[in-house]
Image: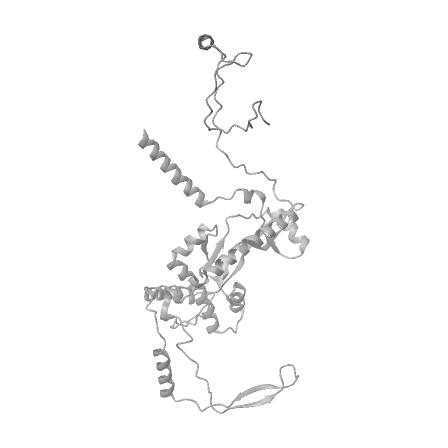
Amino acid sequence: MGSRDGSRAGPLREGWPLKRQQGPTQKGGGRVPAREDASRAALPGPPAPASPPAPAPEVRSVPSEEPVTLARLRLYRKLTRAVAEHLRGELAGILETLTPLFHAETILGDYVQKSMISPKVEAEESVRAQLGPDRWGRGSELAVKREAAQPLSARELEERRAAAKGSVPLKEAIKGADAAFRDLERLYESIAKKRPFDLGLPLKPPLPINTSALEIFPVDYPHMAKSSRESKRVMVTAPLNWIVVYAGFSPKRLRAILADQNRSRDELQRVLIHYLLLHIVLDRKPGLRALLDSLHFPVRTDSPAEFGELPVTVIASAVKTERPADDVILESTDLSGVSVFEEVVRVTNVAAMVDPRKERLLEVVKRETEEEDVGSG
C-alpha cells in the first residue's frame, strides 16, 4: 500500500535502523517555528512503550502418543515399513560407495589369496573347431573343443607359478599387515574351537577372500512374551538394525551350516573367517566407524547367543523402534498363526531424533561466543 507522497511503505524489519524523522508541521503544511517546536519538546509526552521481551529459545516439542494397541498396530506397521525402506536404501547406497575400503587386502596384504598370483594352468593344446547347433538349435555356431593336455610335473608347475608371481608388480607390503593377521589369528583361535563351531582347523594364509561387497539383514532375536493367560517364544525383528556381512555369508547360511550334522569343515571355516575379518577391518579402520556414525548409522558389535562368542557387526539407525507390550504381541501372533513379530516405529521416535553433529557444533559456537564476550569485557 502506497503512502500519500507516492512512496511504497514496506514492513519494518526488526533490528533495522529507523530513518531520521522530520520535525512537526503546521496544519497548512509549513514548518512549525523553532521556538514553538522547542516549547512543544519541553512538554511531557506520553510514556515510551516498553521494549518487547526477547523471544524465548525455540524448543522442539515431541508429540505425545498413546501406547500401541492391537487396533492401531496396522497403522504402525505401515509407518514402520515406509521408514525402514527409506533408511535401508540410504544405508545400502552408503555401503556400496564404501565397498573398496572394506576389502581385506587393504589391511592384510599378501595374507589374502589373489587369483593373479595363483594362476590356473589351462591346456590350450590340440584345439580344433567344429560347427554345431547354437543354444536355441537354430543353425550353427563355432564350438571349440579342447583335448586334455598331459599334466605338468611338479617342477614345471613350480616354475610356472614362480614366473607368474614374478611378473605381477606387487605393491603390497601393507603397513601393519602382520599385526592385523595376528589379531585375526588370535580371534579365530579363541572362537573356532568353542561351541557351536567345534572347529579344529588352523588358520593358514593365504586366506580365500575374494569379495568386498556387503549385504545387510534385519536383526532377529528371541523374546519370551508372557501374560496372565500364556507365555510364548516369539522371534522379534528389529527392522532398523541390520547385520552387516560380506556378500554370500548371510546369518541364514551360517545357521544352516551349524544345523547340518554332515557339514563341511572347510565351508564352516570360510564363513567364520568372513565374519571375523569384517570385525577386524572395522577395528583397524576407526575412520569407517566415525564416518558411518556421522551419517546417523552407528556401528556396534553383538554376539548373538546362537553363534556363541562370534562378533557380529550391526549397523543401527538414529530412529528407534519399540516392542509393544506382551499382550499385544501375543494377540497379534495368535491372529497371524506364526510366532514372529516386528518392532514398530512411532511418530515420537522420529520426532525425538538427535543429530550429534548439530549438538557438537552448537557446543563449539557456544564456547567461541563465550570467549568473545570475555575478551570484549
